[in-house]
Length: 578
Image 1 (tube, rainbow, N blue to C red):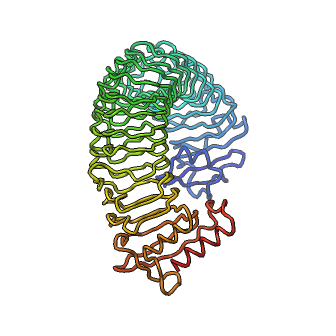
Image 2 (image 1 turned 90 degrees about the horizontal axis):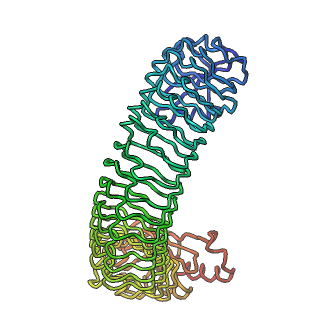
Image 3 (image 1 turned 135 degrees about the horizontal axis):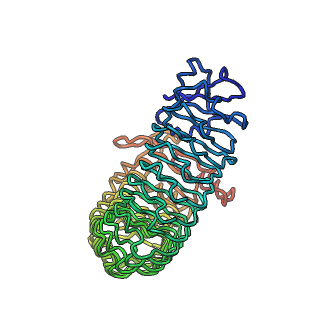
């Protein structure tokens, strides 16, 4: 636990209060919400206080005497409405390591000399003010490591402002009004590692601003107004590892845009207006591991766009408009393990469209417009373990579509237009553990419907209109633990329940019921016979199972049912289960 002390000069030092902040709490978040914290009186010597929160609403407190009683302050948090932080205000605080000024709309200037002799100061955060920056105002902090000036309505960074803090490693200038970067504005920051310029008004990129910035690893210029990148836009930042360009107005990525970034491994260009990507755009960043291109206007990928990106592991291109995925589109992605292509208006998959995706384990093609899955659609994706095809318009699946997905464990085909359970030409999808076929048009299950899914643990057939389930429909599914079924009518539901011997002679809840051999491992059955009830299987015995009827009559599913519907279903289901 770390102790912080709240001091209001108006109340005097005798009314100093103490709060405790645990090690797993974010100190900065706690400091912004201290009003709700439980506090207690200060029992020790105020001269020994190291962490001080000063609360003042009076300009008369803006003088060195206010801090006179305190001599060992290391962390200072100012809650005040002062217009200026004046020269000499913190004289004597030679041990100060952190200074925080948050939410002071009156603060406009910091006088030269305010940071005088603060060689131990490591972090300064001044936010939600209206700062006017001037060269020299930061002088006196030669060992400063982290400077946060976000949310200060800053319009321009003056050249020379940062030369007095040469050891800065993290610089945050997010949520300001900066429109351009002057040449050499970051000159003399050889140790800068993290730079955040997000949520400003940058309209272009000036590479000349970064003379002798040799160690920058992470650059965030998201949510600006950048319309284009000139060739070699980042050539001076050859140590860069992550680059965030989200939320700009980029329409294209030219072939020389990323020249000079040999170490880049994370590139994010989400939420732009990209329509095309040059064939050679990514040639200079061959160590890339993460590529994000979500929410753009990309209609087609050239055959060679990704051909040199063999180290990419994670790629998402959700919410674009690419009607067809053609052969060899992703041939260069031999190292990709996660590939998300949701909501892209994809209508057609070429046979072998995934050529090159030898390492992909997680493939998401949900929320597209696919109507048919062709033969060998996933032939090259032999490592695939998770396949999401929900929310398409799939009506048919070729018998050879899943012939080579020997490691597939999770298959989601929910919310499509399937009329039967898909399989493969070998009737062998025994690696699949979960199968989601909810919200389709399946009306019947026979002994061959699920024979390919011999390893199945969880099956969801809810929100279909099943009229008949033959007695041996689950003959091959001995490992089934969870089953959800929707019936097209009450008669179909009660008929199946009767055929499975879910009958209790004692007719009372909690009694033993007999399950057929193939369903002996079930832990839960959901009956959606018009959406009204399910059975929880509480424990598995050798020959019987204790069951409990759960009444779902107050759920949303009942809102469209008449009283007669409800009474009929409850009477029928209760008769067979209780």
